[in-house]
Length: 384
Ligand code: UD1
Ligand code: UDP
Image: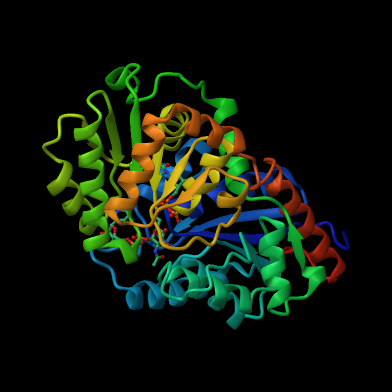
């Protein structure tokens, strides 16, 4: 290092998945004397953000608290851009790190770009190649990658996507996905099965774990997902469904209307991450439109029906446990029904599962790459 003062690095998070996937990075930077990491929450999510950070013992250094009910994309974009910009001016970091594909990610990247700051994109290079699916996340990824200076690609495939778009090869690091770091960290600290909130309620019954929240699924697709879950419960007398509902009222209303009176459907608030990890490990099948859950499920060797038309995580399909079923009732019932009835097919799928998303050391690699980049660029630490 060219001077002895640490590099101030602002790690930006806004939503639940960013919190879970950035947490191990913040912990790795804290361990490394080369860095002085700051955790900046935009507050795009409120309760769900704190719930996700809490198991890692993290509290934001600043929370911009922008969330409001029925927030528009315009509102979130403008608020994050302006308020993150103000914090960057105040804190004068040497680099910022953003994660993934949310509006926080894209707008914070723009704020960094406007200040000529190196922006490191964690989980860079994912592409569905359809700007409408997922919406607006595909655009967020493309814009974020266009404006970044350091690209932390989770897989070789995401690296290839970046190279195909002309990104400099010497600025891409294939690190694995930090969600695997978070998952392994959590499993090593929380006994599974331990005393999870749902343990006593569920006993040993087989259950589906269902999460759905994507913007492009609001309305008819989500209705179809909820009807499918109800039908699966009707067809399988011992089956339960655990449905941790996203706090978005648009999502909750539909799930409650279709499943609220089902005796074997457990509609609950979002689970704490350790409890959710427990639920994924114990579920017979996972039905989800979540990005992170696709990655975690493969690491847990758990079949997951992906409730989307396209995925930017092809590794979940080729060497993971994912099956792309979309949101049509017919397809969900056919695929889930098949796996619930045919234990041989279920076991084959489980045996096929690999761990394409990483080995749990992504955060260490990111810290190493960032430190080397800052030193080699001749950038000075903050108090020098
Ligand atoms: C956001 C991201 C999405 C990500 C998801 C993770 C964008 C445009 N969308 O979608 O990429 O997959 O987070 O969950 O960046 N709410 C609460 N409390 C909370 C969180 C949300 O009440 O703690 C409610 C609020 O009414 C809020 C609404 O949910 O207005 C929607 O939140 P928003 O972040 O805009 O969209 P998500 O669907 O959560
Ligand atoms: N998750 C959680 N509690 C829940 C549901 C999900 O902790 O009740 C975790 C899950 O393990 C994954 C992340 O939240 O790490 C996924 O978040 P979400 O589905 O909101 O966003 P996406 O991954 O689709 O962007």
